Image 1 (tube, rainbow, N blue to C red):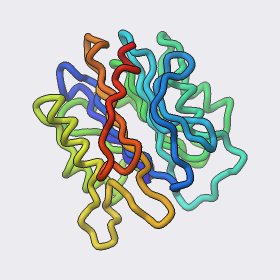
Image 2 (cartoon, rainbow, N blue to C red):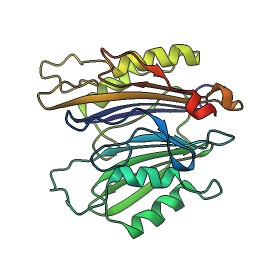
Image 3 (cartoon, one colour):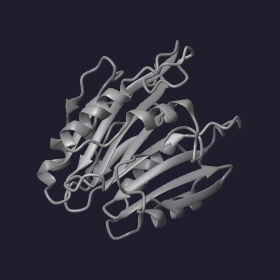
Image 4 (cartoon, one colour):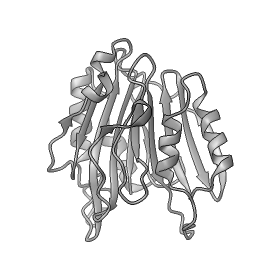
Length: 248
């Protein structure tokens, strides 16, 4: 289970704010965020080489991309291309190409298992969901304000217990500093159900929350972009500041 929480135009100075927990098998640890080819900033999956979350173009109109797997009981196609590579491909799209266009073109060329993919670049904000080989892309440009867009491991709108709890915990504050602190607390939350099915930070016997990332893009000043990353479960791992990777 993964979690993506996204605020769009909830804060005047920071119109794009995103937090994401990466949940995976413990033997699939990802790398720390780094600067990749084409100005992409992301961590990499050591097994398939893609990323679960990244940003690109730290100048005037950076792009954010975050992907979550969808599990609907269908067996995964082992020959399908990594969804993390799709995430990298879209981050590498030309600045003058629409994100939806870049995504749809890519999905015509490659086969992927089911996914949710959030893409944001200034006013171009879309959520793509693919199930059973059918791709649906919808604009989130109207989803502005104090309530975040929440994405898990099911097609939206989802009533996953962890998303229900996230709706109660993740609330925009009146400053970027307070919003980030609220996101950190939520990302490290263990839920309150006896079976922990509503936990945002997961600790199972062979898998769990491997890392957590918070990105906030400033509206005018690239020198104020924020990129924080916890390389471990966010309940017990401090977030380190990788903002310099976006500000360069």
